[in-house]
Image: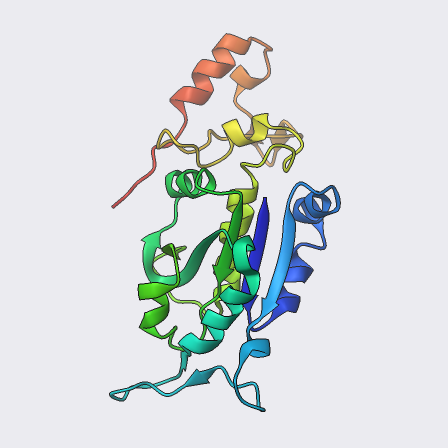
Length: 217
């Protein structure tokens, strides 16, 4: 799987993929990362890519021109184009699976300031995605969340594929069961005895009973 990141801060992206599981996946060729510096596609000597809002309003918007030219530079390698925006579809595990199955290459556009010129949404992208009902200062964080989540579906990314089946947010609207490690007793807080007996069917039943259901309210 390949990810192109259109960003004002390429170093934020590359630093994330230098360490941990993502870093290992990049080194092994499981995922490929490409950063596109949006300022390289400005049409002025100061590399300015934002401007004031028509009709008035606070803040600045990213211009459509630099984003258009950045996407054009990728040619046929842009794949599916996703804009990270607070007004997009709410990103969850089901949507992640749907997006993952739609392509092997994705271009993620990070929003900043007050957002982007709406012509980007109208003409240049395949999907607009929000990672939650809140606003953050950099779309880079949202882009990394989406890329990391999609990467987890790629065989070899996690090393142990069973981790994907049992992780916290599966696609049956259930959350992960409680888990414990040593010591058995910490300040009088003990591990449920059913987990210590080695009876796999009883453990399975206990885990299923103690899963939490996702709350959509």
